[in-house]
Length: 393
View 1 (cartoon, rainbow, N blue to C red):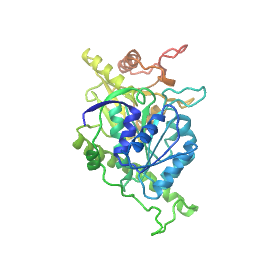
View 2 (cartoon, rainbow, N blue to C red):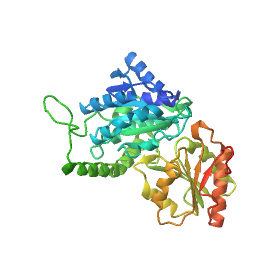
View 3 (cartoon, helix red, strand yellow):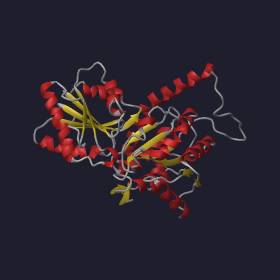
View 4 (cartoon, rainbow, N blue to C red):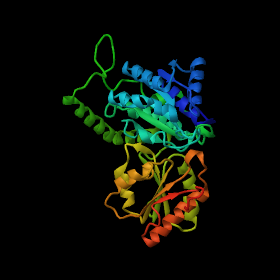
């Protein structure tokens, strides 16, 4: 199919259709609503054979998906911000029962104050929920990662649910050319659904989600942790097979750019990566050895890959569109854990909160601070607030 200009929300819904999702539970919340509305249109038009259930809350939406997935049906939902917070109780249920539900999360600010624009403080608190999590920085990646998410989550070596993150409005409501895959192509990549584990079947009774005493609970947690760690290999395999079939290679866990001979690198997450990419090209043309690391997977965190990059450079910057109050950005915290014991100077840049624009000038400021740090070997300020009134950058 030729390129079509679509929103990120449409790309997510379209990928769910092409994945032959058989169950969708939905509750509207800005800016996610169009994802499930598009799916309802696909079903109404006869393009998608799927059971669509309108529920009374996001908590109910994920509960319904857990129930459907437990019966051996490919299931999908989508949410954002306060809706994800309301779902929180059910997230560990899906992962603890090893159900490969896929969910699109349109990242939006958590209230208060009330704000409907992009921020990552909705998904960051869910890092320990047992869900695999990937961030996208363009609408093509949104489509491609939703279809990949089903293949990753449903692999028997994984059997964990997965979140596909896309930035509110910057991706969800902005149109871009996207290569929309044909059904035959999707079927070739993602085969007919086979549940990775036991499922509810009246003809073969099993018990799922039952009470687990102390004698066994700890082993289930070890199994989940092992599956999360083992998912790295599956993610890499799925990315390679996707690249071979479709010609688009998203770089697996991370996507490094101009890092081989870089003096400094900036780690970005989400749509900020595209903005930073332009500044890297600009600075490279000026002879400045800067590089970029697009952090794609938040869980599992690619600690080994990040550490190897940190060992080669003179300074690292980590950009966060979220904040762990009193400590720093969540991505920065994870990076420092990965780089523990190394002497590389590291700066945490906080910006773009509540939908504030992240401009080319903002990214230039980050790289200028990193280049200065690389020369002196000393960090002037570890936590730098970008474009924040009343706060020195």
